[in-house]
Amino acid sequence: MIIAVASGKGGTGKTLVATSLALSLENKKAVQLLDCDVEEPNSYIFLKPSFRYEETVSIPIPQLDGERCTYCGKCAEVCAYNAISVSPSNVLVFPELCHGCGACSYLCPENALTEINKEVGILETGWAEGIEFVEGKLTIGEIVAPHIIREVKKHINRERLSIIDVAPGTSCPVVEAVKGSDFCLLVTEPTPFGLNDLALAVDMVNKLNIPCGVVINRDGSGDSKVKEYCREEGIPILLRIPLDIDIARLYSQGITLVEGMPQWQEAFLKLYNDIEQVALQTKG
Ligand code: SF4
Ligand code: SF4
Image 1 (cartoon, rainbow, N blue to C red):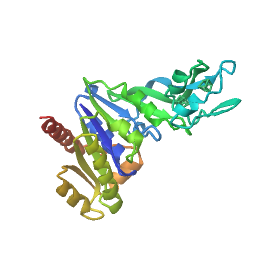
Image 2: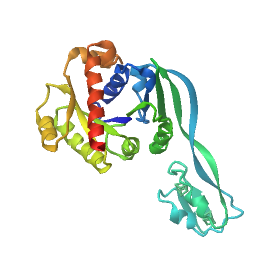
Image 3: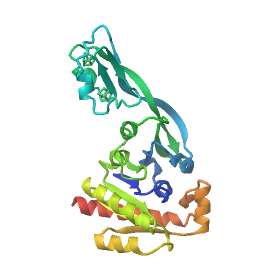
Image 4: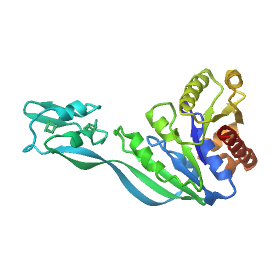
């Protein structure tokens, strides 16, 4: 089963929920956590994995062979990202805009474009308390987060429970991380911003046809509009985490709820069982 843990808005405690859920399960060897928040991965702060393997992630970018080029302009026409510009006597490639799709070199009638690898990030794998941990990290300044996310998701093992920590928001990297999941857990807070961004996230998962449920963090603060929205939309609220100074302290120290307050393990186990039920009902 694949559970994506997402949030329309940043700072809602999504990573705290993802890591606490992973650590609450008894058979940790059957669990893997994939950090797909590749621009700012921070699950490792809570899980403290020992990394055993690191590999670079690259994309193929075009390199011009000026001897062969006729300056026909076909490569610039096909590039959806404006990463190639052709003038009557020159071809300019802008590597920082290139997404490595390969269309230009494939369509060049003169075979004047070869591909060279450009490093855009790294992938790290390791273990934390028996949980398999995979993390993607996009190099600062690079724009191809979805590419790194796809590399992280190649490590999904369908024999295990895969928990995906997704970036906040509803942009392309979020869609890339969430798609293909069996369930999406949306972590929010009871504020007008939380509600607005939750509604956007619900719209996204509905379009992806993925069942979802909500975790309300800092419950007891703000207003009741998130609860009313969930009731009206028929979205189950699966867990409420209260606004609590001790929880905030744990969060600031990078300690998960189930480690810092073991009494929460039962609540997270129930959360997992409820997710399973909702996902099964939706499939049935
Ligand atoms: S498509 Fe090939 S031949 Fe035409 S301008 Fe681009 S590199 Fe040159
Ligand atoms: S590989 Fe794709 S994105 Fe990069 S320059 Fe060629 S067409 Fe554009």
